[in-house]
Each structure stands twice: as C-alpha cells, then as structure tokens.
Image 1 (cartoon, helix red, strand yellow):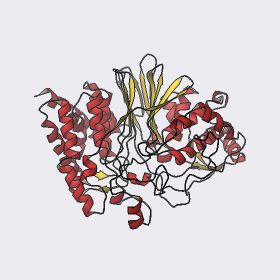
Image 2 (tube, rainbow, N blue to C red):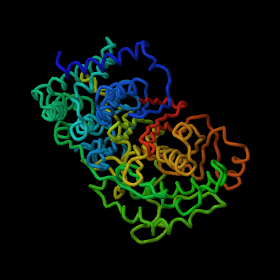
Image 3 (cartoon, rainbow, N blue to C red):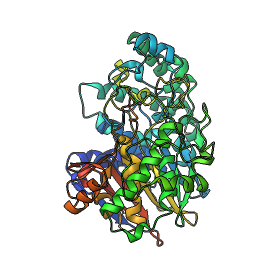
Image 4 (tube, rainbow, N blue to C red):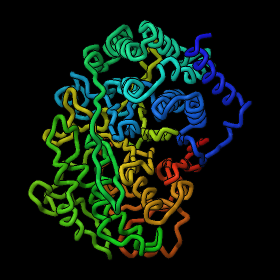
Length: 551
C-alpha cells in the first residue's frame, strides 16, 4: 500500500471511529494541554481530524486545512464549502506572520446600478443567489497547503469524505462527488504535490466545476460567472500589528473588522486596567466606551484597501489614540456614534459616515479554528459562510457575503465589481519577542472583536489561563452599524451575562448604559496559549460547544 494512501486511510479511519462512538472523541472536551501540539475548533469531529493529522506527521497548516474542510460539512450553517476564511499563519521556519486572504470578491455584475434596478437599492438577504461572492475558502485552503503545508488535498480531504459518505441522499453525496473530482485532478500531478494542488485549484476555479457554477448561477438569478471564478486569486498579505504592553497583536487588514481591536487596545493602553476589579462596573464601562470609538471608525473608514484609501497609519497611530482617548467619559456612557478624523488629525469627524437608518437583517454566525504544532507553527482562522443557496448538482453551498457590503455611493464599503466585502471575520495572533504566545478565534458577527478583546485582556491583564479566559462572563454592545445589511445602531446598548453581580449592573445603569441581561454565550471563543517552555494549552467555551485537543 503506497505511503500516501496509507496515511489517507489512517486519518479517515480515525475519524470514522470517532464519529461512531468507538473513541472517546465524541465527549465534549473543551480544554486540553500538551507538550507537542494543540487544537481548538468549533466541532469535535474537526478537532479529531486535526489531531489525527498532527499525530500522522502533518504540521499546523495541514491540520488546520483538515479541520476546516470538516467544519464546512459538519457546520454548514456557519461555514460552507462555498464560503470564506481569513487565516493568520506563523511560519516557524521563516519566523514571519502572514495573512492568507480567503475572502472572495464581488462578481463583475455586482454593481450599485444592478441592485437599484432589481432589488430596490438593497442587497437581498439570505437565500438569494445574488448575494454570493466568489467562493474563496477552497483556494485559501489549497494555498495554505502549498505555502506552509506538507500534505496533499486528497490526504486532508479524507476525513471530510468519511463524513460525507455516511449519507445516501441530500447534498452530501453531491459534494462528495465534487470533492472527488478535485482529487482526481490533483492526481494528474503525477506525485508532484505542488503541481497537484495547482491542478486541484484549476479544476474548481477554471475547469468543469466553474462552468457548472456559472450555468447554475445564470439559471437562478445569481451574479457569479465563470470569469469571476477563473480570475480568482488568494492574496498573501502582511498582517497589521500593534504593540500592547510588550506584546505584538496581529490582525488582518481593513477588509475585516480586525484593525478596530488594535485601535481599541491603543486607547486602553492609556489606562491602568489592572487596578480595576475584573468585570466590575468601572472595568466594563471603560472597555465598552473604548470599543464604541474603535467600532465607529470601523463603520466610517474600513473597506477593501485595493479599492479605497483607508487611513490606516493615522487610525493605528499613538497620536490619534491620544486625541480620541479623552472622549471616553469615565462617568457616563456615550449615546452618539463618534467616528474620528485621522486625516485631519481631529478627535471627531463631525459627520455621520452614512445613512444609518436603512433597514437590515440579524447578526450572523461563523465558526473557529486554532492549531499549534511541535515545530512552532501556529494557525488562527475564522471560517464563515451562511444563509446562501445550494448550487445544484455540485453540492456546493454558496454563502451570502455580499450582504457585508452596502449600496451607499462614496462609502468605503460600497459594492463594486471585484471588491472584497468588509467582513467581521477576525482571527488574532499574539507574539512576544518575535514568538507566538497566543491565538484567538471568535464566532459571532459584530461581537467577534469585542469578545476577542475581553478574552485577550483576561489573559494579559489578569493572568487567566485559556479555560478561564473563554468562560469568564462577557458583555457586548450594539452601539454600531450592523455588518449585515447595515442594521441601525442601538445607541448606548450593553448586553451582558446574567451572572454579573447586581452591584455591577446597577453601577452600569447609573452611568447611562441601556443594560440587557442574557444567558451565555455571547460570542463563541476559542483560545490557544504557548508558554515559555512551549507547552500548548487550548480551550473553547463549552457554553458555545467549542472543542479542544492536545498531546
């Protein structure tokens, strides 16, 4: 039996045993620690697949790809095969952090004029073919394998096919056939791994599958065409980074909401957070008011930097943070949207970034994936893709990511052909002295960086381990423009766990917050920490059904 095929069978068998209950992987293990490797994901089967890959000699990139492919099948309402995934990678060999942009662009037919003519000037909601962006996830995974991995797509797709083959009817057998067509194309590489990965991408994006997606889209009112798929490129980008008390925090660019976390940390660095009792009224108030300022700039300025001039140098600068910090009233909650003016070096822009009164839809969700291996590689990914439509016999569920764009002419996030939506997906890597020490991924739409901030500060400021950091009571605000169809803001809103003490609630209400209590979870976080001895500890919030593995 060839070694490559043997490894494929090993991974598939491990997963099939796990899902049949013959291994204890079906138990809800939400935190784990080990010397070699660690994984935290949104599902037990994906975590098991990643660990099987690591134990079979694969690295963090290989394991992350295997886990993400599994999630696209086990969690299709949160991350679909035709969806998207931004990925942060620390490459231990080269000692660099890079971004793999797994976000597809708007099709060439996706113009403001089109939506004005056909949809009353709005991008439609879930279940409409016209909301699909170019599916970016698969090419991002193939690119990750090519650039950082050691395995083939066939090997890393084996756990997913083991799941799909359990079904006789429905979309799963159709997607299994599509995956096997991609694998067949990969085999034409004649054993050359890199050639095979390129052929796999060509099969999906420039071959018969792309033609079938084009035909389906034309027949069902979609905008996706063969040319959109054939010209798709997965960009490798430098991350954005900001220092916070001796740590370097890495995020993706302003085609995500990630930079607002860096802006918020800049604001908070001017306060002695450690002197405030954790989750006390003053602490929650300070974080909330800082987040409001960061999110206001997100809504006013962020967009695809290939299309618009996003003033990142100003937004992330210390002088701009110093200008904005005095806007935080330590006694009163703000009930205004207050974007700043980084170009004019002013604390307030003075005008609304857009018409916030347009109707919109509900907050959407995603899932999560973190992996660290024995060689020091780390991968943080936040995959998504929801509310879309099934593309016929391909079995490919397309997402509805165009809903994250708007139709406001002149706005940085206004829809244009070839433009990336400004998405909420926002993985995080944290380094100290050039080496990764933590990674975070959170599902939950506009809540993602708000929850990331709290999980990160739980660890850095209060010394919480990952299990404590992801389970501590949380809070979020909707004092923002919703990222899905631009829902209007709920000014002064603050939602927090019922577990918060009555004294803290009363304190926040006295400060003017419009408080709502909620049962857990708020956001779905996972966290991975690497200590100075390289021990890896991972945890995912059990209330959000996150899973962790380590060895």
